[in-house]
Image (cartoon, rainbow, N blue to C red):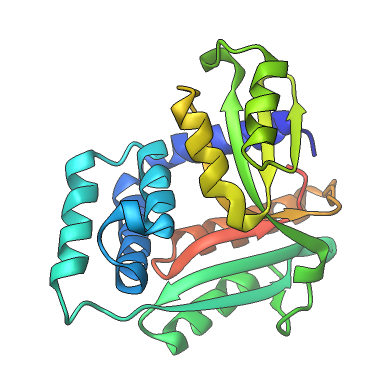
Length: 242
């Protein structure tokens, strides 16, 4: 899949999110709770929290909402304990799907996620059944229209900061890093005043699957929509070339 599609998908998701900002903010708020519990409320000493704040800002989450979420997580000893759970499975025509959830009720999450797969004609598999088809990477997407910097200069800043790869696409730049290096690379780009569409650790498919049957496309969209609408689900990764 080209970077153009990745960029288009991110823009499409952001537009879709505009109609459901509350749900997105809730999901990011849960990530803030987990990060604060693990590493404290000071982003200067908590790189995971810094990354989530950057993600929140890229989703247009207001600063005061972010600050409130951090303070609430830091001050509430009885805050909900969220557990990270990952499910893997198959959609139509053997498409691979990975679902990351943060939940306070593992049974509820499992039931809802299984239902989403079933309603779209897919099925949940065993742990590891599709994750080997993906690479876990830090991925930063930059909109060409918003970036005045020359591609070579941008690439050198990214590579000097520890990026593994840099690609120029039709309307965007893509920077790939090892998962542990995304903070350093993102901060180097921020210091250079480079606006980013997104910067997060993601699962990138090694190969993409094209769906040509209309029914398969409808089923795949149903699975993805049901999963993304679930309050327990944080991220949905797949290898469908949309």
